[in-house]
Length: 96
Image (cartoon, rainbow, N blue to C red; front, top):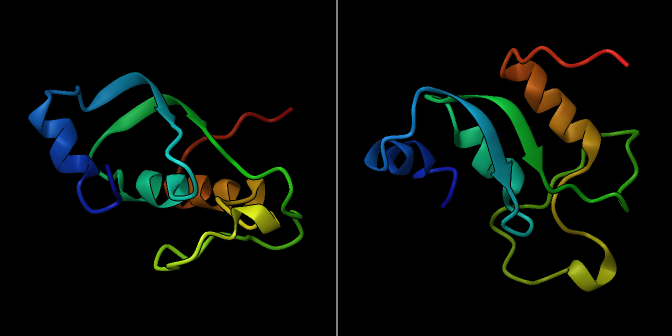
């Protein structure tokens, strides 16, 4: 599942347009996959993030990177990147 095919796969398997829970954990490219979901609307999103990345600027692994930098702690995306993506998707975020 990728950013480019997530909507088509959801259609193929008859996922309802609005559904309860989406969980994404596909190692490093979770951000892009969620970004690609434009025709379906989960009520709750559970997604893998990288807690080792600082949150002062949005950090997202380059999806075209050919080498694995996981051993150096550079993988996935940080919370700020996901927060900003949620805002772009016009998702109401819980105020804690």
